[in-house]
Amino acid sequence: MSTAFLLPATIAPDWPGNFWWHLLIMTVLLIAVLMISVIMFIWLERRVIARFQARVGPNRAGPFGLLQSFADVIKILTKEDIIPALADKPLFWIAPAMAFVPVLMILAVIPLSDGLQLADINVGVVYISAVSAITAIGIFMSGMSSNNKYSLIGAMREIAQLISFEIPMLLALAGLVMASSSMSISGVIGAQTIPFALTQPLAFVVFVIALLAEINRTPFDLVEADSELTAGFNTEYSGMKFAVLYLTEYSEAVVGSILISTFFLGGWRGPFLPGIIWLVIKMLASFFVILWIRSTIPRFRIDQSMKLAWKTLLPLAMFNLFIMAVKTVFAPGLTNWVAVPVYLAITAVIIIYWARFMRPGRQSVGI
Amino acid sequence: MLQGYGYVALFLLVSLAFAGVMITLPVLLRKFKVIPYKPSAVKSSTVECGLETTGRSWVQFNPHYYFFALIAVALDVMLVFLLPWALVLAGLGVFALVAAAIFVAILSLGYIYAWRKGVLQWK
Image (cartoon, rainbow over all chains, first blue to last red; front, side):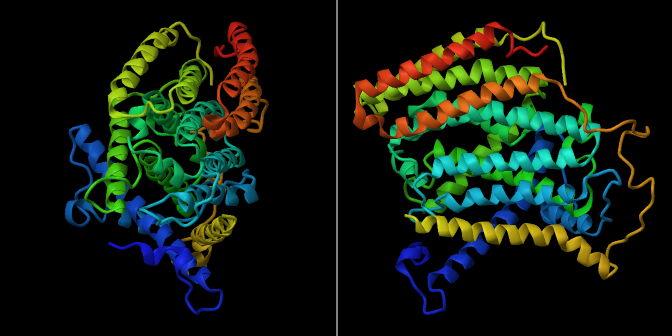
């Protein structure tokens, strides 16, 4: 499959505005594909989780229940739109869009295949972390504007998780920036002749855990902890606005698995198959691991989550950065398959040693 | 390279339009009587598992979040300095490594102080 026809620089149709039209069509196509895939991923998640719990899962609407999510969308679209009387109405309206748009924005800099990328900006890593932080503000707005105590607790937890887990996540990414001497996403992928998951396993572990916390997946879904906060930040939401918040959550999971495969599993790189197929395979694998973690590990308390961020992940990410710095300065050529077991061994030793600071028990519980 | 930001802006406009349409669609559907609209006092009251809500919800909150935010600001600033350093370290050599190590050590003093004082502990 040739992807050259999608390159913005190589084509300039004779339309007014030249290739901007071309980009506009690409953008709309990309968002549409993401939305369809998110809806399919919701179906996939429900089926896989059902398997983990020895159930069958949705299997009535269409073959294998494939149309279940579409039916849900139609159902939720025809629900009455209720706004609580005490809510802060403008914020209540804006909040879902504020949470949803940044998740889409991340896709603008992700290369889907060799050269198939909308915007190859030279600060891609910083762009992704900056944009993804806005989602948390949207979720905070939705919780704060609902004027509900459960929502408020969920909103405060969202901000606490964001600021805590963003630092280890960015420190892990700084290790990648160092190894690839580039901040653009295509540069980071270009440096992965060996995937960074193998040459920087410590950063990989830290990044995956921090990402799970940032996208509020299950071990860290304190924001909407059902057993204590009814539904957390989206308790007061119903109808289409709730659907947008729900879509935000799953788009984050899908985009998060794209980020894991782009940063650490080599993105579109791989033998024999076209790049986009490799990206989809890696994305599905990452998403399956996220589901696996969700169905295995019970929810953390807020104190455990904060402790994990500040006392475990932050020092580990710092160790990784300085190990990589020493390696970059003193042994720049030491990136080959022979060194991979050494990296894995160092990672195992550091994690096992540092896990002593993560003893459970004997903590008081707060909200 | 700067053109890339133009594409990002285009993407922002398209996704804003998409989200806007999704959120305002129910308003349109209500006009066409597709979705019901029967407001009542109970329906628009605050959800609190059956009980009536008391007092305001915008209250003063657990101050521990504030401590975490303060440390996070300090370490975020450190990150702003570390990212460009990481980008060009391969061409700078030992001096840059030692300089960054000293910089991080100074900041780590504050971090260790906060840890010893029990700020990172949830009480």
